[in-house]
Length: 218
Image (cartoon, rainbow, N blue to C red; front, side, top):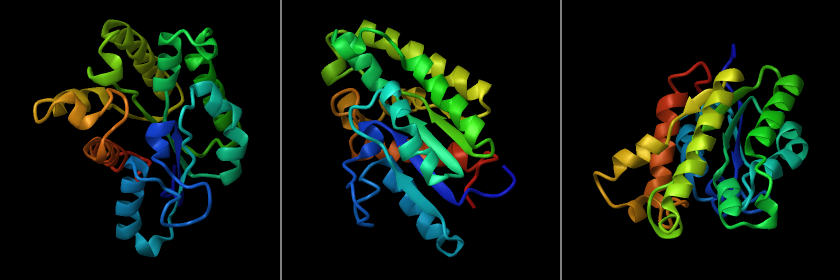
């Protein structure tokens, strides 16, 4: 994009949600996760540039849930940059054999929402984050199956990033490397959801990639 993004939207599931409020209270509407950390750092550094940050992550969402609310929670906000992290709930419900996970719609729904975004807002920048897991808590019992599902989603998401000209933020290797410093639960307390340190890890990786890309927020 030719100009730096002014309206930045974070979308996804509980990892993005971060316990955000559902009102306009500026102390809580960004949640307490990586979206908050990125927004607080850039908002402070770029105070004179009038940047607006939104968080519309919803805990429990799959890609199909995200697509179902895409008009209301994304397109209506007219963002210049959309950051998306989705996938772990698609795997979780499929792994648990829940009725909502019988048909795996991850790739299909993800593609639909990207196609729609490109059609309606062709100039909006896209940032896709790699879904991730570590072996602890919820993932231990069926670790090989978890690795297989999430591995497929990682490849699908990266392929979509390339196809739709999105900035790709790899995260699995970032978490794998972090295991040299502390155990898995230190970063992802249940193998899926980040701790405070895990969110900081995501935020730093996001900033290191996006701020060196054509979508840099300056």
